[in-house]
Length: 107
Image (cartoon, rainbow, N blue to C red; front, side, top):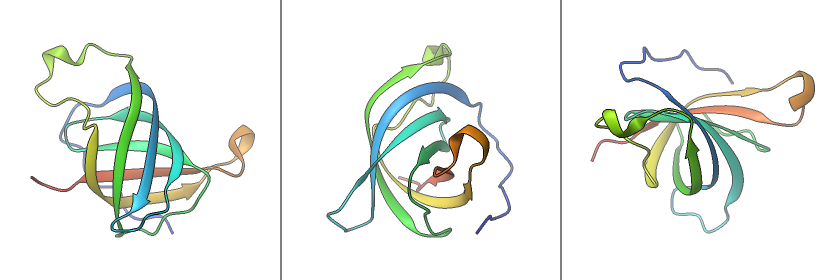
């Protein structure tokens, strides 16, 4: 279920964010915790495995940016359509969670 990671061209910003996500055009949604973002994508942890290549709708409910993103032209996207690029089951103290990397669809 793990896909090859794309090269990252944009600076990542650490964050602590509460998000909800759903598969595109589906009414059911799930909660997740965003851990970083860039102008191109983000990373979050959720309790469900997501299919690589699928499109999801992500809505950020709140986010504390751990960096000064005011100097970066690309901030967090509060609502976005994104492609699942990677999904892996986490181990250790985070058993039962999945780490998910997404790339935002272009506008």
